Image (tube, rainbow, N blue to C red; front, side, top):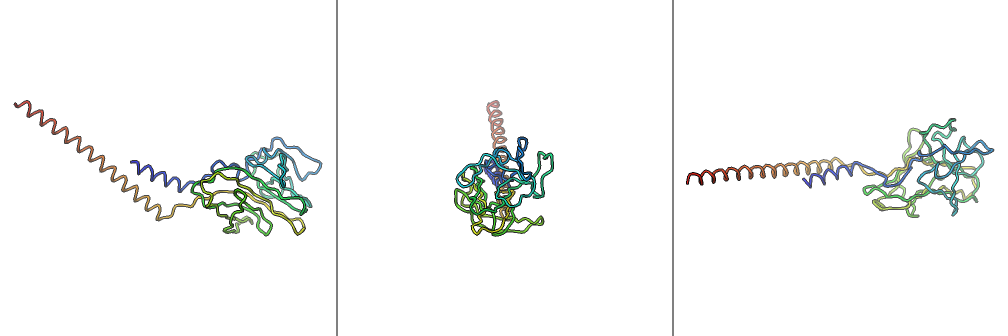
Length: 253
């Protein structure tokens, strides 16, 4: 029975991908109830803890406790902002479950890089980190404990975004610092934009052979457990039979 429980736990672990205590990897937990509006109608502003719960935001070495929410696409600025996923402006009033992404525009190579980071535990069976992004030479860089992750692949999606995959197998099961850093613009190019969304740690699906082996193990375990139960039951019947025979013999004397 103990083996059966261990095998069931193994199947559950193979089929489940969890993000440990990382929070808000999809950037959709924004609280927009306390926004302030400035003279420029491109942005509203809120506390970083409201708009990016779970994350800390920095520009260079300076932590930023306020950040913008992009109301419509800006022109000619350098900014890291939360944005609606369609990048074509936000409805008013904002629905509480509106989907967001992280948007970056750079027009000033001297402005310093932005980054967001948080601590969390990577799932023990995780092998990859995936994210959805715009793709070019101008892209966000994920790192763990200040070590840039190894890029594995980028696949074009139907909505024009790309699903990009990085290797995190060396950090599986560990509590680490996950960082996303905005791309630099050292050449002073014209304003360039990038965005990122939907980070997720990926646990490989169990292969057909693994499931077959686990299923065989379960069958053997169940068979053995059943045989043990049958043996115990037979032993009890035999002991009762011998007890009754002994009692009859005693009475006949």
